[in-house]
Length: 370
Figure (tube, helix red, strand yellow):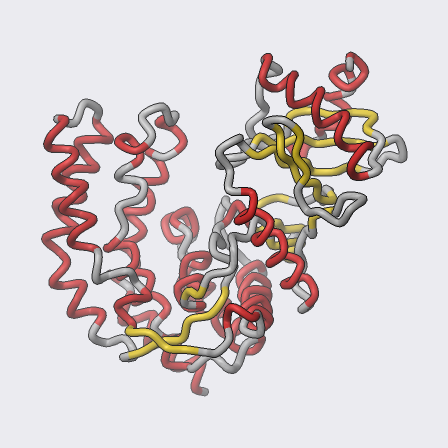
């Protein structure tokens, strides 16, 4: 055990720099269990094991085996729906078979994607050296690279059994707009009942009120969407942290969610209009046009009218969302730095998108129909 802990600094490396955890009793228990499960279930003899980047829900570790190969280990909380997690890992395998770069989970001796003992359940993935996430924003040649990979991803996932038969839904459902008034009204009532205590909570309440008042304007903007839009299986959580980049190329798409039909345009807009990108990159609009063009080349079956409306879909979705405004109420134990800056940036980005909506659609229409 001491050898595992003492070699942590050598194993970690610069790629796993984000969010180191303290080696507390919970972590030590994980390390003990993981170090036993790796050889018993996966045939991996660990030489070093250390805490890795923080996950949204999982505790992550980096293992180095006796041959020098590194592995990414995800330990799931006891409350995790392991059936859903297995389906998500299977979806990543499916995407990988269509040619999309993914980190496929290593199977156990008996073919399982997740193994468990006691309260510890884990999955194991090959560790990708020399990569960084896209959460710092898109720029330069990363725009078309990301657009092309997402296009290939959606083209492949359109053949997933849950995507069949192909179907269309009313466009307002794509933005989750029909339920927006209820969600915002409920959030406002919760804040008013408790009296906001922090600056963020006061801001969240005021922002929710503003969004509720703006819903008629958003409804009018959504009238310009195609009446019905395609839904299919998509990644489900395609955000900057779930894209691994190596230079300007996409090294892997990670952390899929279980297969569920959603709009591919919604998902494309979600990754291309990341708040840090929109608020921090002056040329984000031209980059977005390049990315959507690359997406269209990789997935030409999606109607041009839907692709042209990607910013309109995203604007409607953001106006209907109550995340992360509700975080202080739903998760009072959450660290403010984990959501407050994101909340401010996301709200600002929504305003920028609305301001540039018409110009963006004109540029996209010109690019996609030329």
